Image (tube, rainbow, N blue to C red; front, side, top):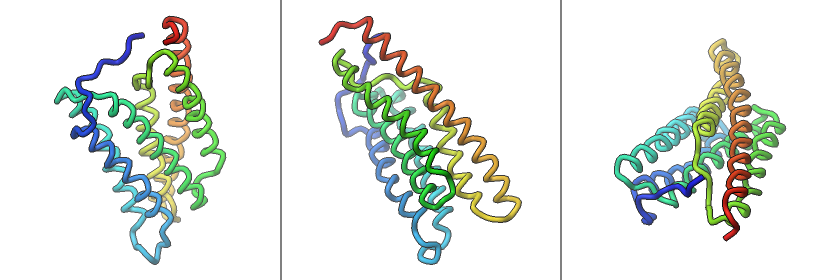
Length: 199
């Protein structure tokens, strides 16, 4: 496994600024979901729009980095960090609202803790992160559109029920993919440790 190649060492690039902006949206989303409904009417819908914008910038920063030759080490680390923060923030906020069970947070957080534990092993071989692969992106995509549907399903109408069912189906599928991606990252790390001497 070769170290990913980078086009630039600059931090202040348009793709990286989009990733930073996506990070700023995390506390905004949590505030919108947990705000009392009477204090901010339509806060759930605004929260979903924040997530939609975050999802768009997630695609856009990668597209621009490749198109403008601005792939960077910072961007390679920021992208998955922003994705994981969004997923955990969403689940925590929805669990506080009692829209999802706390065990789901444990399932997703356990996978991230597993990967976090591999960081020192990667650094011992001169790596800072592993390249994001398709299954990891697919899992993130599923989770990032599943939980807004769960949020929009907080109601008693038929439309709410449909959103809730589709949201939960996507959340369970996305959680399974999330762990599948995690297992693949573990396998990549083991292969890297075996093939690269300690630096």
